[in-house]
Structures are given as structure tokens and as C-alpha cells.
Length: 357
Image 1 (cartoon, rainbow, N blue to C red):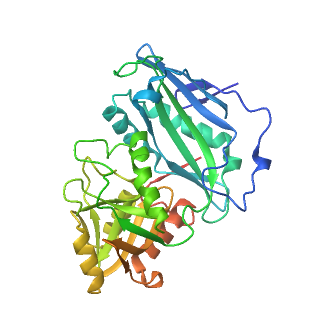
Image 2 (cartoon, one colour):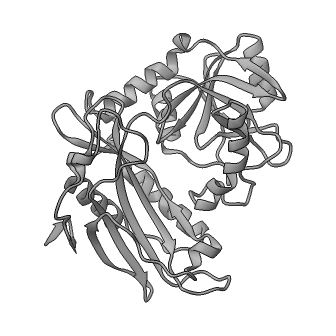
């Protein structure tokens, strides 16, 4: 079987039996169930070849596979949503495509074409559209990734790679407002490093400090700059935003901060609504003082998995600071509802962000 989308034709090996009946869609946990099919392509002889869709299953690897030893591995995360009419909307996939290639270039890996990324994604989601949950707050999480496949022990860029996309139905990432701790010792990323890329090593290096914070009762960290540990960069695996004196304030982008697509969407919406937006350095001291003087109205994380995660407590240097009550937070509540309505097709897509399958 083969299926053609636009000018791309590639073979499809459909799963003989669906596993969808094994999933309890009323009690979805994030990242535990995987849809029937996946996209696979291989890079060799200087080009991408053998683009195909196959049943979801194991990937072969050799013990000397270079990504296991030298970390050439990148990924993306995006979501598809089911409308009340049964349409499936993939949210801003072209932005994920662009960022995927930015990560690839930073990690000395080959880029992919837009036709290959978007069309394969569209066909995969269409094939597994029954896996897109219909309940409010649920979605189909989509994970494109690429890793080096040379069987070679030596520090050099691989000459071969594999590109894969798989999907999983998910519920809410956070079920409650989060408590975060300002990280003054460990560093997530430094200027000139790989913090702006979605490479596997960024997340591995963050696990120990995150685990230590969780053992103290916090959900995530507020990462700070690597020099002074004073300027806020991200919150856990999310970008972070504050409403101070009625302005939406967020750390500016750089090589140590991931350019989040949810972040970009929220900033565009805020500006469209006429809200003043500031992308700049944001210090821990500024945020704590703004909270103490009643000028901090809201604080929240922004990312694909959680969309918006309200921050209820910020721990700084051994002191817990309670932030304004969740029910008083006008902007984050309004923008969350607007984005949900947009993704689920309940309002017109005035930004042209949904790719409807």
C-alpha cells in the first residue's frame, strides 16, 4: 500500500490489528500509550531515503551506535486536537518543523525538508485519527525525533541518521498549580551552548537538580543564568511568563533559552489583544519584590505538554513565596481558554495556526 500527499509518495505498512481497545481514554496518563503507526526514514549517501509508515514497534540498534555514545539526538513535541465535528487540528506544525531543523544544525545533523516533515506527519495523524481523544483537555501528542546511527566509536558527526515520528494520546500534564524552586547552583544551559536546541542531553542534565527539588516537595525549577544565577531563563521544561503591573513579561530568547511555540503563540495573542509585552532580562529579585508589593498578578509556565501551568509558589533561598490566588488570574485564564477554543475548533482560526486533517 502507498499513499500520496502533495508530491510525496511513500509506502505504508498498516498494522494488521489495532491496539486502541487496550487504552482507557477516560483515564489517560501522559506518554504511556502509543498509537498504531510511526513514520520512519533513513539518511545515508548524503540524502534522506526510504520514507515509510510502519506499525509502531522496536527500532534496531548496534551497541556502537554513535548517538548512544556522543549524543546526536534531537526531538520535537506538538499536539493534535479533535473538534466537536470530528475534524483533527494539528497546532502550528510548521513552527515545529523550523525548530527541528534549527536543532539539527546546532547538533551537526542533516535537516529535513518541509514536504517530508509536514506531509508524513499529516498522513500519520490521518491514519491514526481514531487515537485522537475527544475529551476536553486531552489531545494526541506527536513526537518527531532524529538520532545518529553510525556504528562507530569516535568523536565525529555520524554519516547516517534515522528520523521517526510516533504519537500518543494524552490527558493533562499537570493536574494542579505548580510549586517551583529557584535553582541557584545547577545550570540548565549557557550562552553559546545548546539550550535553544531540543537535544536529548539538555533534558538528561536537568534530571538530577529536578529530582532534588521534587524530593523537597516542588514540582519544577526556575532555571537561572549560568553566571550570576539571578536572571530567570525557564521553568522546568517550559518557558516562563509573569504579569507585572498589567504587563506580560518573559525572559528574552538567546542561545540558552528554548524558543517555545506556546510561548510565541501567547505573546502574539497578547499583542493582538493590545496588551503590553516585554521580552527582556527578568531577575529573581524583581519577581520576588513585585510579589511582595502586590505588583505581580500572575506567573505561569508555557509549553506544549502543559500549555499553561499556573505557578502557585516560588521558593527562593529557603523561603516559600505564595503568589496571587489562581482565581484572580485574568490573563492566563483568558489566554488558556482562547487557545483551547482555537485548537478544538470552537472559534475561527484567525491566525491560520491549525493544520486540519
